[in-house]
Length: 177
Image (cartoon, helix red, strand yellow):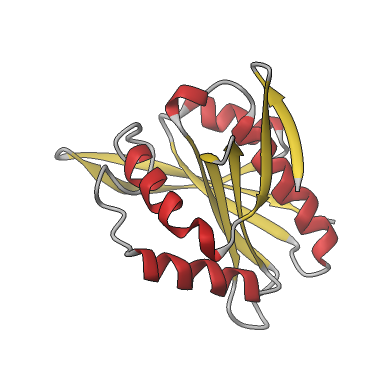
């Protein structure tokens, strides 16, 4: 667990647990409508509370997975989900997704979630590389990832299709020593 302060409010960053499933579903359905940079839109997340509980429990069981949330007064305001590969040959590398409620954008919450992931990865003894993909037109996201040490590795053409328009993604990675 980690505590940070934003606008004189205490934000707790902690591992998700089964009891968070309902709040996470509600959170994900909100953020889906706040940004076109996510892989899902409002109402498209598509997991039941039971399925989310199972997803959280499975993440908690794996040594190469991390599911954390940021909360203020018990309200989920951000999350990060990382999962390493399922086999011995790729268990050391994984990809993450991160999001923050729009009303809290620009306050460093996403950065703190990613820093938590990086520190956890270094301590894991397993994770040697963190991958992500970000839309090429998400300048603020790319700037943050570069600030944290992620390097550009390639472009995936037509990775997103939103309202009939294609968007490319930038693949980025961070080596963990």
